[in-house]
Length: 257
Image (cartoon, rainbow, N blue to C red; front, side, top):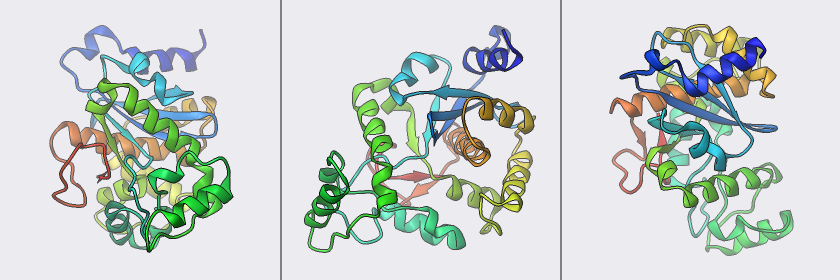
């Protein structure tokens, strides 16, 4: 078994002694082939890569070792789309400032299972009096949105542990101020690595290498770590969400940070 797969196995299962009395969380970010996960046991520990071809495999692959799962995908859709998206999306844009364009507006619930872009656009506009159209980039995310919705509907274990995050919101909360560089630029990647290291992630270079071998690009890997950071905060009762003071299920129409 190669070094990569050994590390991946440790990330999913852990060593028995090391896992006793330890909280494990995972952050997931979508990548080309599925979902790249960052399993983390909190500040001072090394993140481990976990790749899932589908979120429907999360319960089988992760239980009983994971307490909180943070996913970078909208969870919970409005019946009628509105300009600027859900309230949590609007709050998130204001919070991250210069990176606001990275928060996209999800579709109305009724448009999610459309057959093509034209139908999705028409159904979204028809969902409410002020409902906007959809960008083709937003419609390209429909398969991931459908997958997340179906996975949560099928698993009470997943619903009880899952929260929605947006990595740029997580990084903004880590930094205490808006980030200076976009995440796909070299300076942006370095800026985010520095924030994660300061937050207690050890051996990021190993995690990035393993994530790359699993099919994730660098910014997907760093985003998964940011999601794990918020999952850890949620496990300790320290996380906040947009909208502030929101009620209802933790996973639905709230963005945690």
